[in-house]
Length: 347
Image 1 (cartoon, rainbow, N blue to C red):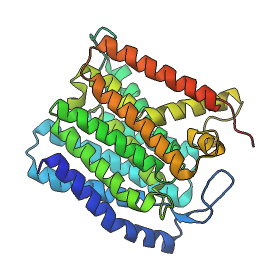
Image 2: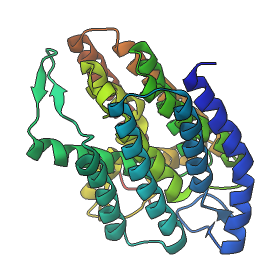
Image 3: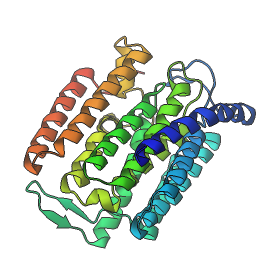
């Protein structure tokens, strides 16, 4: 069995086994998400599902890594991602219990990102222009740019976690997308880690699909976002121009765009950028009469289409890839305007 399939299967199995225990712990420790005016669930639901996701991922990667002879650089990157990912998970878990202020949570995210970038030298060293040429970045640009990427992706997945199964499904699709591209380019480390992420998400979905028995909470959504962002800037993924820029953005296109729309919407409405609202895509779909399951399924389809586009773009020139990407963004912006995502939702 290929190592990346093994990592996927192990993560699915571990998530299925440990999540019931996490549900039990959440009930006895009071880690429950209670309904309010912005949320769609009607009763308290356990919200530390990230503990099951984290456990499944770590055990899967650990077991698989024993079977693979990584070189020194790959092993260094794995340790860095595991260590920084653990910091993010712990931060999210504390927030699930204590509801940390937004500024404190942001500072924690920046710290975890800085550990990965400065402590393990995992950063965006270069970008590519439309003509396929490399533009190398000095450290004073590369370091803050990578920290911004890590923190930004961490929060995009966090913000899309609004319906049963939505964030887990989108994360699984994004993980599989990056896995497929990694296999195209023979990047075994990336394939193993994204296989484990996808498996953890799929196993968790058994308990998180509508009607959800548990939510992933910030410990899960922040962990998914941070790990996908970190994996996408490891040394192997950066070695191909198209992959370094386009694939991670398209693979996570749905949460990235939803977050961007939220920022614009709140800025235009004179609201604080970090203040929650009911203007996200899933809220708009519900207001149009979609059920939770229908809205989530539609967003899965959108994510899958973006993922297929990302895989396909690795086979074309940089110029054609950028033209196609701009066309995709244009179509999404048109759809966003029609749905009214750039307008503040009625209170």
